[in-house]
Image: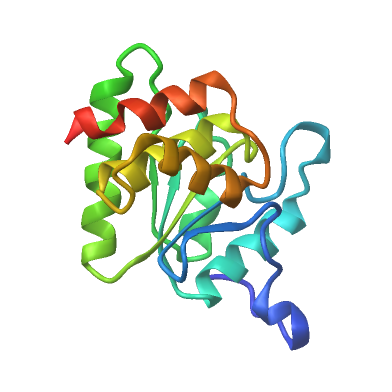
Length: 168
């Protein structure tokens, strides 16, 4: 049973680098609790509580290791571990995009997290925007994704976006 919190802590805290990809439907953030030396157990717990209290129906973790995923179970937030696969990226992305689409179609708010909000996760989400057909033109999809990220994307992220329509 999750711990009972009172007052402002009952609502948790917004995860670091939380960014909406599709407003009120699909978002990204860094790994709850942080990464490496900055990781804090209490912060992880508070961020997962925030996700749960804000109606997220599923968390997709694309980090390679299953670190701390049991905390989602403890705090009663459904999750799925989908480590990013660079060796078979086309098959991986097609399966991930299909899974996200299906979760959203069933009314779930979805959060995707990596260790950090870097070009990998941003590129994957930009690819999703293009894969769904929300933005067909690859140049526009890159521009939209860069606006969401607040910076220019690296060649890896741009390539995912350019290639995403071929995965349909």
